[in-house]
Image 1 (cartoon, one colour):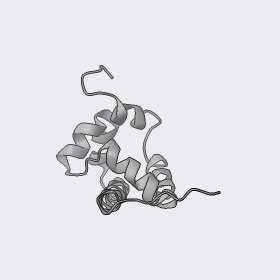
Image 2: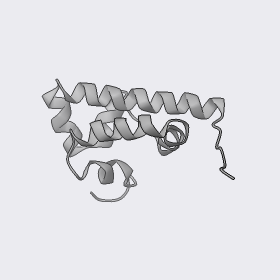
Image 3: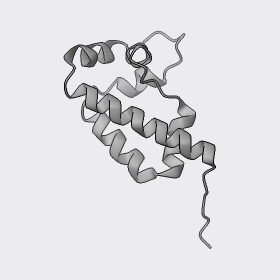
Image 4: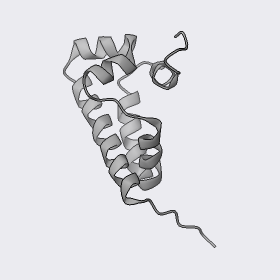
Length: 97
């Protein structure tokens, strides 16, 4: 029997915020060269400074609530950033990059 996973209201809200954040980052990368440059050097700091930071829990919520939207947003983002982007964002802030 197939198991259905249901997201809570909080998870759905977090998922929507995460998707909008990724969409905003993708949009800004298409026109703001300075943002793109800074993002490649310090993704976490650049996103926080721009008010576009997200956390693991919201990404997890997006994957649970709307996996197709997550895949599309991630693909759009990763087409615009370098291969090290995810490692830089996911690395603990105390680890050297």
